[in-house]
Image (cartoon, rainbow, N blue to C red; front, side, top):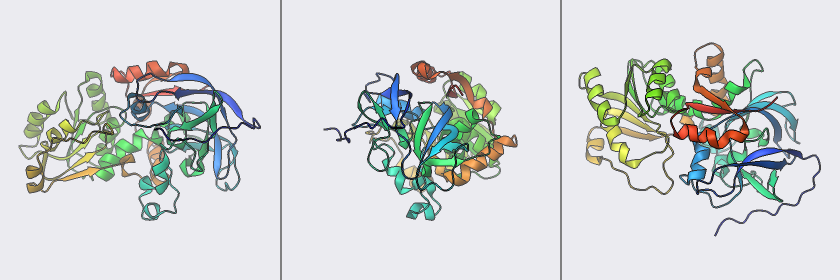
Length: 388
């Protein structure tokens, strides 16, 4: 039985009437419907954001395909956005109308044990990002007379969203908001996978498996960390060519072919790090990734695997006897309040490529075509741009 959600009783006072892309039948590949929604004003420690753009992350598509399972609906999708604060609720001290902000798909309260230990990506609030309600257990979004859940407490597939301030990061107003939107999820997830999770060092040989919106940033992260050789593995020729622009020194269309390449360029020593960022994680590919890594090396696993996948092909004997490390990572092990401004600073100084990540822009009404383009390998990152 699905979760019982709160009944919606509309006051219709100070609501924003707008449009949003909703998922009514998660896990059925039925796609998104763009329709009228109503958004309540912000409550305690919340802000109403007028969005400039939203990235089209694969994670939202996972909800449509069922790779990430939820047992409630409807959902307003989108968790990668940037915009301008329109209104703040009670108790908000560090934000004001007119502030430019990025929305982090993972909130960070700054008070729980993971946050104070420096692991903001593991904030206890993050456990509720797929719960189907705001953090207080109620809804801010409504459609067809009922409450609507929001992806990651946000719902950026709408020109407006109400967000908990724990997920709102103030940024320099000089930064283009359509580019800033990307650092809410995909950019730090990939970049941090190379820099933090895999702990890439100067001179390393790094293999990145999958070079979409996350993997391409793993390439950038490996480059920033000083890797001397970066091998981008992707079956899509377009993405392999683009990977060279982002810092890859070599490319391969498959893991099998990558092995011969890595053996050749390392004189048989193999790669120091491998970062698995394929759009949908496949346990059958994990061992083929491990084989690419030397004794004492690191395999950083970033992909979202199908939620009910439990079988993995893995040579445990070789793994243990070679002293390798398999490292899972959420949000690239980044700290949102530290790393989002830092990455945007790198961008403004010409050290991080964001413009080049945006392959196509779309109107909200074209969201299903945008995700089809992603599946067809046409996009590094598609972005919905809203009228300002």
